[in-house]
Image (tube, rainbow, N blue to C red; front, side, top):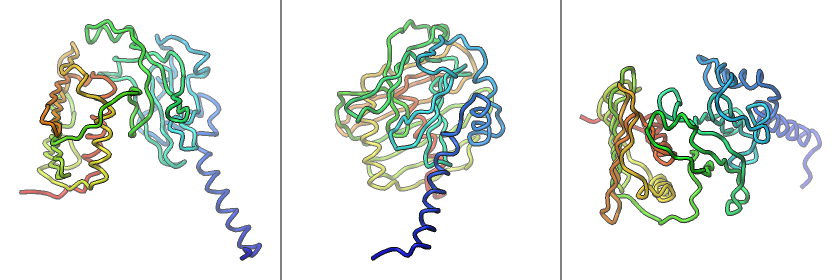
Length: 297
């Protein structure tokens, strides 16, 4: 059946408006000033981001990012994301043209545990999805007392930037427990426990949107996704203890019991652990806000 011309024109107009909306916010950025304006209006109106493009001791990479920002489709969803490489390394992921998610790729206090961007690459296994080759910045050694100059290939997967893993074992968990401690400030203090059946408990102690004890039921799809996520991270291969040399920082405790009853326990003072741990931290921090929590006695 032929579509009437007026209706066809109207539908075409609506479609074009949607496409324009998806492209207008990141695709139209052409200068540092426009990038800063975008970051302030769409990411955090209370933070100017002015320091991001100031002089940095990170090595210059004109062959990678000429203007300290790059529009690139990092997750291959058809829309451009924004990669930032100035005073810190970060990325803005474009969800639908008007919904954005900011990711710091430098960790620790004041992002001092930073990474240098060496080059851009791609993963053939994932239809040439872009990847970032990074290496610990020399100042990393000052804060964690290590000397690691190895290169790491990271990609955007499971909603986070994590190391590319070409070989991992499929695993499932029996229980995940994550808790945080106080800092000299307003660091969230809470505990989350996720059982294999999806029953999840949340103890919101201080500096959270909620306060008290709560529970929720995660659906089967979420548990399957979490199992895939944890399998890909290969946490069993990581050291269990990390510590910044500064004082008054929060500590994160992460414990995982797998279905084969093997356990892994992490203590991360200052949250300076590797990308794998930060990805899971991010997931659990978000769960505080995204769970349909029911208050318990």
